[in-house]
Picture 1 (spheres, helix red, strand yellow):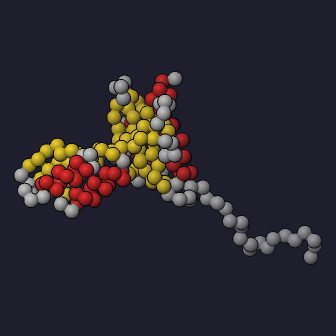
Picture 2: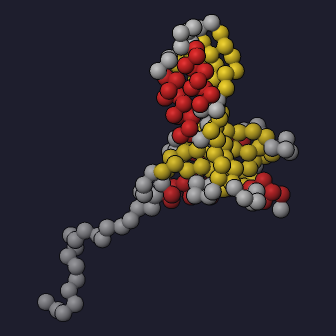
Picture 3: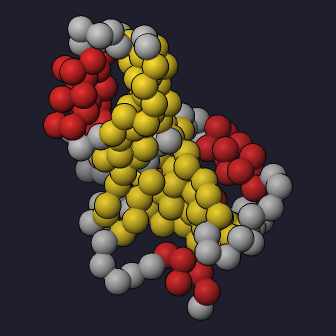
Length: 191
């Protein structure tokens, strides 16, 4: 044998790192898009093709009715979310995309909860609603509708308390987010 030995033909190749196999975490993306038919479908289809489950999606037009803002909340690893963000940029009618996951932000959602109510527990329900700075927007003989806004954690805490009374119906808008400070994703699209 020589001093420079060749590796055996049957030796396994060295292990390689596969991109996108990191830890899954919650990501929040903000996309500024043209307000046109089909844009939402293209964004959702891209996320489906990348095998993301969208946890929440909030869409509304901006001060300019020709432009819409999407807040997309999903679970994924950093590499795959970054790739999806880059692909969003390539879609027709997508003007700007920003992953605000690690940015200082204000995040809230709106929730309406219809809760079973009786004459006996109505006072307790009102106290809980007031304690959580929520409000009752409808009162019927056998139910109340509670409206609240806040972070996902704050909303979950109130819902957990109301669950003990019996939730008849619940609707959540999903997270909407705005970066803290003077920077604006909307102004950045106008440049």
